[in-house]
Image 1 (cartoon, rainbow, N blue to C red):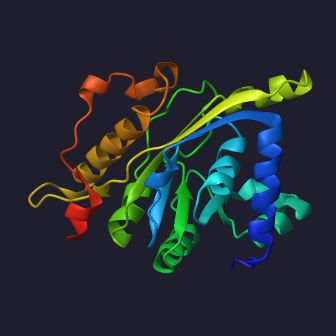
Image 2: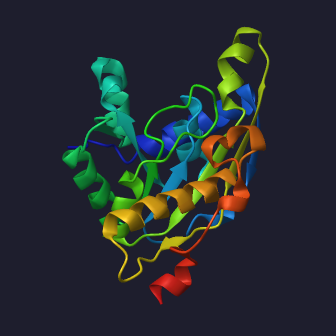
Length: 231
């Protein structure tokens, strides 16, 4: 159960935005791609602990983030996370409670933050995406907005030297998933994940693209503009 405080969130976001402007040389591109209304999934790459904080703080609409259950072991962190509206997820397994909470957030017509890699990339290059995000998007029939973060992995190094960290956050155009009759469901999910990950990779500098580095291999068989999908 979440015990979020709706007054705490805007205050925390304000504080975070001020801190980011002080600590980072922050460039934000494409925030207009966040839907003006209705539910959506913000799909991020994950290279630093800052990435979820950056995304939820600077987005023009409310986005709820999941956080690995290990973060809740610290009592103070657990209180802050719950006040903020975040919820725990057990990584490496099918966490049904986290799935139910995710779907409930989308039914409430809010944004949901997801990192389809499932863990932070130690090399900053994209890891192979997992199918959890696609499963939730298919169940909820919501748009996906790719969000590419680069530079944040240097924050700790620069902080120790009292340097601001150049960081770029790019919001890409939203897309929707459209299954095709006659193709096995599991096969479709894997291809949808690959296609979504390539959309994210295209927003990142080349050295961050990892296993999705060859953009010429990208397809869009199952991805459609959201207006077309919902019409």
